[in-house]
Image (cartoon, rainbow, N blue to C red; front, side):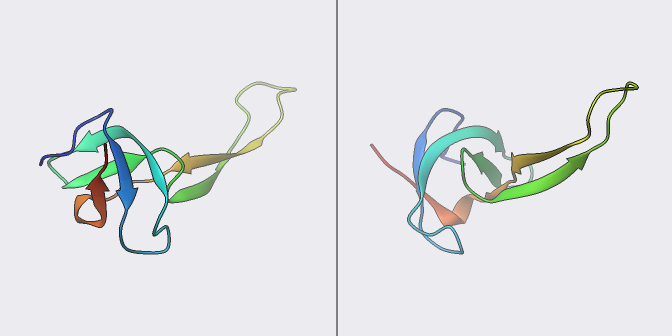
Length: 72
């Protein structure tokens, strides 16, 4: 895999086509990368302590490395 953590990439295919971002995490075993602000999903987070509010967090999910291209 030629793309590493910290590289700037652009998404070339899929629903997020044209978006640019920085690679937050590379997963070479799965051939996937997590790009900042791309492929965002909402996840419900239950409160752990009494009195704390529950939250809906927005997280970046991994996408296939073949769907991104390194930029300068």
